[in-house]
Image 1 (cartoon, rainbow, N blue to C red):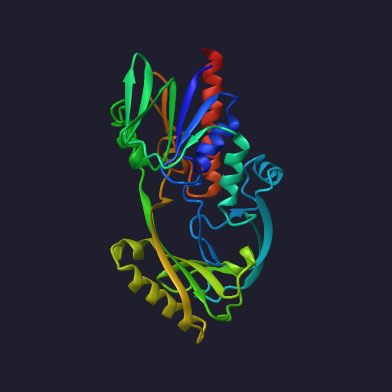
Image 2 (image 1 turned 135 degrees about the vertical axis):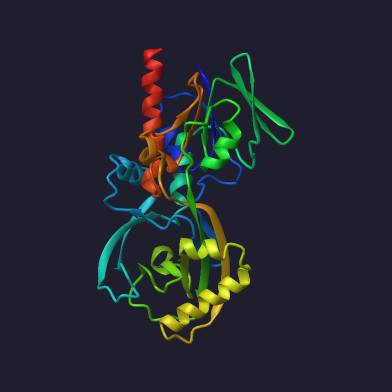
Length: 326
């Protein structure tokens, strides 16, 4: 049986492994857990989905909702949503899909259901080729040999890892927006008439209440995303300065006297795909001439969770068809 290495355990990588037939697959993950940017930050009694916020109920990817329900990874919530807070847009009910115990539940449950061996806390820094086989290098460790290697990571990182094997001269650069994200717990309710929405201020692009998602803490908790252009201008802002600024903006917006009892911020460098590979040249992945090395991820399809899942699914279909032909 052919041996396959998958670098990364984000939603694209998990989708690839799920849609491939039973093969000898091994995951490599630089973090201590699966999920990539689908992350739930936990601190004492607080929990914040500070990566991907939710999955749209009508995302259009066939079979995904049914699979996630089958492995008990999700729940459907109805919340009050405002499409443009600063313009006083009407508040409406909106149903969304979230992880059953935080959004990290989704990749954790998928990964567990696959039963493939995984090397956590292993950052692959180089790939070596010997006699048509590939070896992965992480610090002073060497893994292999592998017949195929799939790299599911941000475009720049996969390019750095694969450019000795793949000619990138005709492949368009993928641009990302970076996003500052702030997690805040207030000691009492702010009085917001919605659970999530867009455009609170010219600087804040999105915010989402965490209490109606997690339902187990007393303080009112929020995750706040700053606008991409603001993040670019203040890319190197001190964390505490950003956190205090956002707290003051929220208190001012809701005319609240609540105090922040917890503040934490995180800068997502590769947060949002501005223009996908498919949009630029109709391709849905990058492959080597010998069709043994691949780069893929949400940047191939778009910025959303369903795009990440679709990226792995499309590559799995291509790989399965290619193997049948050969």
